[in-house]
Image 1 (cartoon, rainbow, N blue to C red):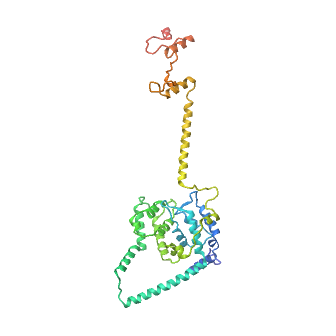
Image 2: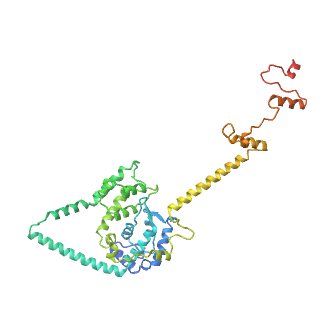
Image 3: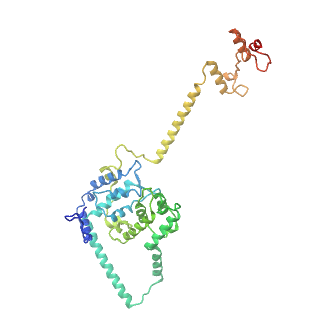
Length: 395
């Protein structure tokens, strides 16, 4: 969507608010892709695949927002995208089941973009706002004429509400302090890896984080908005100061905040999506990429592979050892050394129980016979004290 420009290419920002409202109205009335389930499914799956979706069908919670930000065929406001990110439901490792998240988007985005539902909702909210204003005015008039009398039960309920509600500044201060305590880098711009921030906010039992009294939807939306810098880390000061105010703004939004309440599907009349029918429209994983049935089966396959590789290694060892004997006699000796003898408790009647005599002519006698055969004088044994013939002649 583009704002109109003048003949010099400039924008008139004096009536920018009215122009933005006009753009949102046009996006609502011309929501072709957002209201078409088939086109919406194809567009979102294409964007998700571009983020590097593998066979697990999962993405990190701080990565999946780019699928909605890059969805240029769907005109969603930034607050609507944040509302959808609050419904990501990550696991303890920060992974989001993409198939489940796309089912949520397939159910909520058409409901958000339906012009008739939007008009009905705005009329209902206007009536509720008028009734609430009338009740507040009546309560103020009644409080002026009579003293306020409260029972003990009402006082306990008010104290409980005061304990639960935490203001925006306190939430920002507690989150920044909790993140600063685990930051040992002491960088000029404090930053932490996204996994560390996720574990502190989502999985942590830190008292400062728990004192913020944030529900699961708000925590999921908060960790989903983490933006990484060039070093792959999150500058948490800017991160907290930017998205905590938006989180409180979403609390006060009667239109989008209704999607995050308990029983929102039945209250707003959102039909439950058919997972099989939506998957049949356009599959999440491309052809050739098959997801294993379960992780356990994958582990069993891995154990079989280790066993097969081990058997191959042992077979290669046996082959290399079997090449060691070169003659039949040597092979018999080699087999005898590897088997127990009769004296060591071997079985009688086996080749290992029969001692083999060494061939005659070993040592000095054998070398002497060899030299005499060719008419040469044999060398004298060491330590005999005799002088070789060549040395005696020289003397």
